[in-house]
Length: 182
Image (cartoon, rainbow, N blue to C red; front, side, top):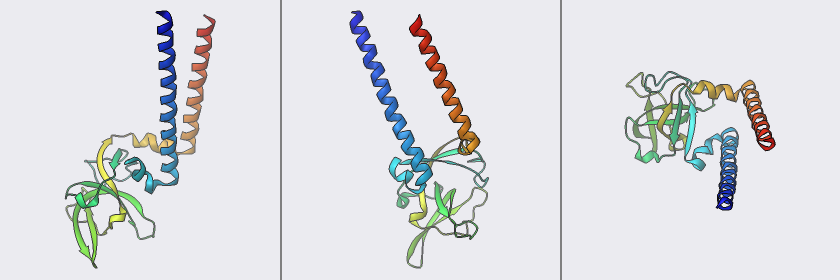
């Protein structure tokens, strides 16, 4: 009976290690895609997280909230849905991610365009976006965790995270060493 229990523990431990490696692989893939190919992240994983940096959607979505968006068919959007999209806000030629309410779908110069609005105003934003600019639809938020995420993107935050991981690994190794001596 003891052999069966030992074998069961070994099997469960091996399964846990394998699952951990699989999770680490996908986490690593997510981080690499997030850093190198952010526009394609949602296409691969179907979901993406974004840290909110402006107050245009308060109090629905606040500055420093982390929002989760999912890949979504723009043809199914309804007025009032919250969407994330790319738009050149200040005319510098660089598109930035923005999250606003979907307002309406119209046609301009024979092309379908989408209009959005912030929570501050009921009038549509000045820009028109194309279907290729839409990233996804809002599905939820984690309040105030955006500060932590921004910190972890900074070089000091990365070093702090790595230092904590090393300390935890060292503690685990020391504890395992003590168990073997007993």
